[in-house]
Every structure is written in structure tokens, then in C-alpha cells.
Length: 168
Image (cartoon, rainbow, N blue to C red; front, side, top):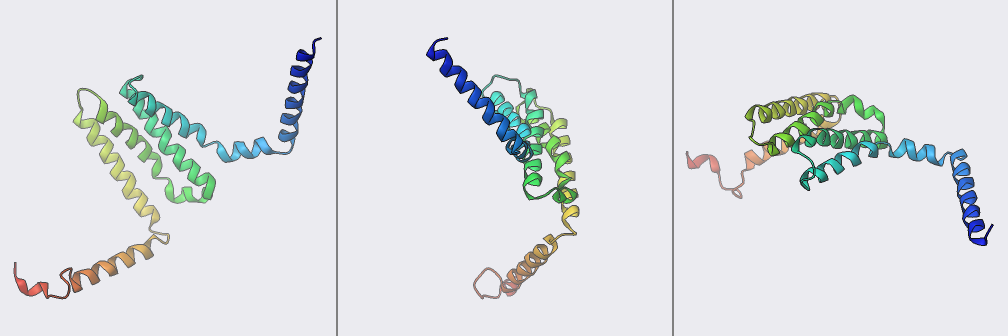
């Protein structure tokens, strides 16, 4: 054997040994557990790029939107804990709504029914999300916003002038 082939074989053996050692130390398992949502997010973004680069038809926007939203949702839950899914589950139909809405924007001829269906599904998803978050600390934020809004209406935007005496 030549020294060039010995060098390549030695490099291959060193790499194989490192892969085995890192695998036994759990490095690949950790990366798999931490980064698996990218297996959804990256294809979704790639499909978006292909559609916007005019290499795929707009129909690919439906799975692109779904994969992108699900990848972000699962990445969030994977990072901050899967207990969040008890409150964020309405994001699942929102992913379908995003995909359908994107498709409805780029399909020719435009279908008003598809747009309306996507918007209705999105609104239902957001309403479910609101009700899902009612049991959390979002109620403190909502209460504070209502108090501040009431104070703003009482004091007025006009810097102290009484806006109620100006009439209609």
C-alpha cells in the first residue's frame, strides 16, 4: 500500500472511532433529542424557498406552512418543556390554516372559499388558543391592559382637556 492510501485508511479509522466514542457518550442522542424539530422546520422553509423561486407549484405551500408552524411549535415545546402543549395545542389547526392561506394567495384563479376557510380555521384556532391560555398568567396581563385602557379613556389623549364636554 502507498503512504497516501495508508493516510486515508488511518483517517477513516480515526473518524470511525470518534463516531463510536461520541455515540457511546450520548452526544448523538442529545443532538437527536434537542434538534429533531429541525427535521420539520427545515423542509418547510425549503419548500417555501422552492415555491418562491418558482421551482414548485403553489400547492407545495400547504405542506410548507404546516411543516413550518409545527417545526416552530415542537421546537418551542422541546426547548421549554412539553407541558406547554397543554396550552399550545390550538397551534396544530393553525398550521393547516397557514398552509391553506398561503396556497390561497398564490393559486390562480383565486378561490374565495379557500381563503375564507383558511381564515375561519385560523380564527377558530386563535380563539381556542385564547381560551386555552385563560387558565394561565395571561389573565393578569389582560387585567392590566384593561385597567390601563380604562385609565387612558378616563384621562383622555388630549393632555388634560375635558374631551367629554366637546359634544359629538
